[in-house]
Every structure is written in structure tokens, then in C-alpha cells.
Amino acid sequence: MRLARVIAGALLAFFVLGWLLPFWSVVATALKDEIEVRTTIPIVPPSHPTLAPFAKAFDSLKTGLTNSLAFTLLATLLSTLIGSVNGYVLSRVRFRYSDVIFLMLSFGIFIPYHAVAIPLIIVTSKLGLFNSILGMALVHTIYGIPICTLFFRSYLDELPSSILDAARVDGADDLTIYARIVLPLSWPAFIVTAVFQFTSIWNDFLFGVILTKGENQPASVVLANLLGTTSAEWNVQMAGTFLYALPVVVFYLLLSKYLIRGYLTGAVRG
Amino acid sequence: MATGRVYVLYQAFAVFIAVAFFFVYGLIGWNVLLSFTESRGLIISYEFAGLQQYEKAIKDPVLYVALRNNALLISLFIPGSICLGLILAMLLDVMGGKVESALRTLFLLPFSLSFVVTAAMWAWMYNYTFGVANTLLSMLLRGIRVNWLGDPGIAMFSIILALMWQFSGYTALLFSAGIKSIPAEQLEAAKVDGASTLQIYLHVIIPQLKPWILSAFVVLMVFALKAFDFIYVLTNGGPGVSTYVLALLMYRRAFFETDFPYGAALATILLLIVIAVVVPYLVSSLRRR
Image (cartoon, rainbow over all chains, first blue to last red; front, side, top):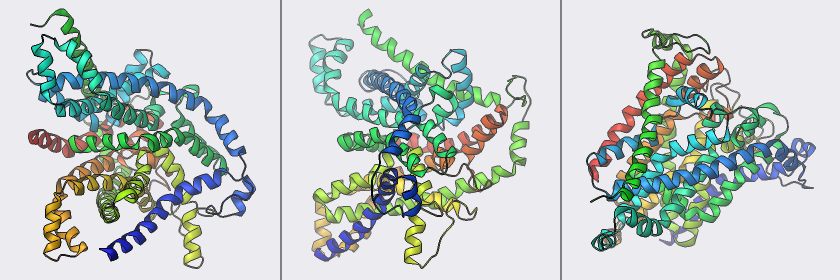
């Protein structure tokens, strides 16, 4: 057993190095000036660190970051609330075809959004939601409904029904049970769902690239453009990558417990 | 029994489901419909034009490159990520305690990041002159450099390697959860029988991870079929068309060459392949409930 731990430790050290190198290379490069980027290798730390690349990257990204933050927060809030209502009805209210509805909804988690992309452009244009932040928020909310419903249904399925039955005996109706008992009890599901939604909406690229232009583009698309056009300025590109990734990394480090729970629920039940 | 107040909840539910179904199934149907129309640039006509878009697809040489690359993702990226995930999960399990949870968090970090971010990181890692990959390689192997993203014979494999980095922490997480769910008595019994650590993993633990490997397989499969953002940002299909995948081809044809009906046909083909994989899994997981 001791030997096994030594071998495992050595192998893990090797993997940790491999996992960290890309991150280290981003940070080290983002802190170098253009000359140092070209004269040193990316694993060497900057000899005289500079924040100039960050300032330059932030300049190009700030509109995108603001856009992303706006629609991500709104869509996270809306889709989580909707998921809570749907999850409650599908988990606790018995009615015909509820399993079929849930199955059909779950399919929405897996679809390639390319298969709805062209009609989505037509629909959002007709509704005046094409190339708008509100439109992005609503599209993300709608396509978030399946996974949010799954999260809440999984959570509420595990809740002992004795609590709800007691309330029912006391004469409470479904709406009262939902508002007074289910909502307060399901705060862990709210955190799991909200963290999951925030990261996946913030990270999205496809909806941004097909539904927005210019000023309204999210940070993901602006960063992709930055990477494509100024292929020489690696320090600025890496600083931009860092800035766009930062909120998710901070979220992840603070709330990884909940995000992990989300990943597990999504895989096991999905 | 139900008063008007209660109906609010059901009405809200009905509206949410209706909207979600319209945007999923309604738009899928709409897309299929578009795939049977004629190409007229930005103007969309709804006259039935038969299977001409699908005939166009069969004659599109890039479609075969794309399908081959999706097949490469399936045959290399999936088993690669599952094996690496198994190795990481086992190593973490041997260590246990705080080391295990800290390193699991580290290995999972790339999975939580946007594909735009990871593609940017790997574009820099794989940079021919300055990148970390070639820097280390030329230090270790005396000046050898690989044209990771510039050689059409290598680029797809570079993509697969980077994607394994992004996904193996996720498969490791699933398998760790699987290992934790195995009753401790079983492992004790094997130990009493004199099995070595390696034997316990190979003969007791891994066979019991089958359902976890299956769900990892489905998640990775769906990704291998839908893969888009990462490749779009890292190589944009190049060099030449060597790293095109189905979703990227659809995007280029539909939105770059503004051929919506043809893009719709390619999207339909992509969807059908995903359905063939996902629907059996979904139905069986519902039965298990």
C-alpha cells in the first residue's frame, strides 16, 4: 500500500505539471511585454512584469464582457426559476404523460444547437430579438429550461414526501406547498443550477456568433475575433483569455462543490 | 379540488414546456423543412425542392473529411479521455484525503472553462516557434519541433490531445464517484484474499464502474459529434480543410456562404446521428428509474 502511494504520487505530480502548464503559460505570457514574449520561452516567468497587455485586452473586451455579464445574469436567474417550477410539477404532481414530457424535455439537453440555428435566426429577427442583449438572455433562458428542470426534478425526487404530505393533510394546496415548503427547501438545487447555468451561458460561443453583431457580441465572440486578427500580439491575446476566463475560474474555485454536483447530476440522469 | 390560485402554477408550467418544445421541436421541424428547399442566397423560399440539398451533401468532398474527423474524435478522443480519466481516478483514490479533493478540483478546472478559452490556451501551447509544446520537446529531444497545428496530417491529433486535457478531469470525476459507491466490504474482502492494489483496481473496481463508463461514453459521444467552438477557434478547420468536423462544415456553408437550405440539410444529418446515439440511452435511463 505504501509503495502504491509513492508510485501514485509520482505519476500524479507528472499529470499536475501537464495540467498546470497551459495555465502557467497564459499567465506568464500575459505579464510580458512584446519583446520579452519573443525573446524568452513561455515557461520562464516575466523578468519585469507589466500590466499593459491587460489594459489593452480589457479595452477591446470591455463591451463584450459587459454584454456577457448582462445576459448571463438575466438568463441564469430566469432559467433557474423556471426549472424550479417545472421540476416541482414533474416531480410532485401526478398527471398523465409526465414521464413522456420529461423525456422529451431531456432530449433538449443533448440536441446540437446547429439543428435549430437557422430557424432561430428567423424567429429572433421576427420577434425583434436578433442582435440584442435581451434576445441573447431569452434564447439562453429557453434552451436552459431542459437542464434546469432536470436539476430540480432530480433534487425534489430525493426529498422525503412525508414533509409535503403533512402539509397536504393540513389543507395546503400545491401553490402554497411550492411557495412555503419546496422553494425554501430547494436552496441547494438553486445554487447547483445557478452555478451551472452561469458558467455554461458565460462560456457559450455558438448563440453569440450567430445571433449578435458588432457592439452586441458577447465576450466569447470578441475574444475569438481578437485571437483571429492580431495573430502577433500573444501577450494581449493571453491577457484577454485570462480576463474572459476569470469570472468562471473564481466561481469554480469558490463553488466547485456545487458545480461538481451539477456535472454529476447531468451525467447520471441525463 | 384545484382552486384558481393553484392553476397559476400549472399554467406557468404549461407555458414553459410549450415554449421549450417550440424552440426545440418546432425549430428542428422548421430546419428539416428548410433542408428540402432550394438555395437562393439570403432569401428563403418554402417551395419543395426535393432532396437536392442532400444530393449536394453527398457530392461535397469536405463532408467526407468532416465525417472522418468526427470518427477520429469518436475512436481516439473518447477512449483516450475514458482511459486517462480512469487512471486519474485510480491515482486520486490511492492518495485519498485532501490531496484527492484538491487535485480533483485542479483536473476538472479545464472542463469548466469555455472552449474559446481552452482553444486560445492551446493555440499558444502549440505555437511553432514560441509554444510550450515545442519548447519542451526541443529541450528533451535535441531540437525536434512538431508543426502541431500547421501540418494537415498532425493537426487533428493535436486537437484530440488538447480535448483529452479538457475532458479527462470530468471523466475522472465520474469514475471517482463510481469508486466511492462501491461497498468497502468488497475491497476489504479482496485485500484479505491477498490481492495487490493493482489487482483490486483491475478486477474488483473497474468492472463495477461500467454504468459510469457508459454515461461518460454518452456524454463524450454527444460532444464528439457536436464539436464546434474549440475547433473553430483553434484551427478554423485548417490547414486547408484537414480539421473540418460536421458542425463546422454546417456553420461555414450556412453562415459564411449563406446557403441556408444546404446548411439546414447538414444540420439535419448531424441531428440524425446524435438522435441515433442519445435516444436509446435516454429511453433506457428512464426505464431504470
